[in-house]
Length: 222
Image 1 (cartoon, rainbow, N blue to C red):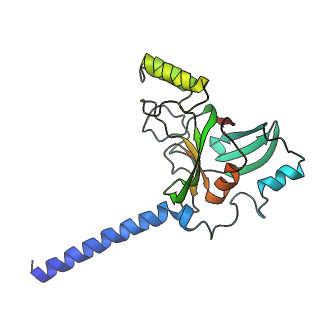
Image 2: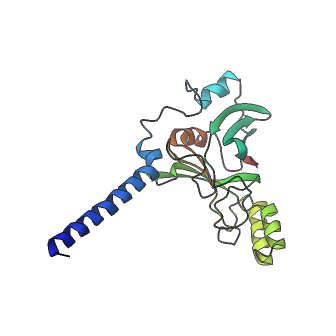
Image 3: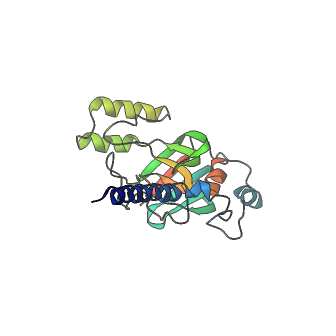
């Protein structure tokens, strides 16, 4: 192979790699890069801000707000007591089976709570700007993990104690962690691209972020 031909091959290979990286990042960041071009909400048209929906229903007390996620429908519904207020479309983990351990990229099922809120500026890839931490693994997850030999007795006690204190449990056991409700979703990402978290479009995540607090109950159903 001549030196000139080798140089052309190297240049074309590098150009191809750069193009692939650029396309991947465009896909990964579409929820933030394209946020201004995405309609106000992918779940209602015309868009009705959730604050307006609360007012229309005469709801001023937010202490009864809780969230229901139905994995088989890819939905997240905001409730006030037993009244459904608004439903959002969400993306989940790779399949609809229940999360078992770290790295399985599944979304858990059960009763959880929000233990923390974070705002990122600039937005993070796949997460967007608004992130709500869930208390996965909860005590039921820990009990299952203990019976299956995935965690030790001390791991179980640490997780149980954190849940009793309504704080984020250890995130580094074999049960996994890092389960959030967050933004960063985009129109070309599909419905099962997360690592187990619950993802919304960035504008929806911002709207939801404003009406929930730490301690808000989150029910995830199959």
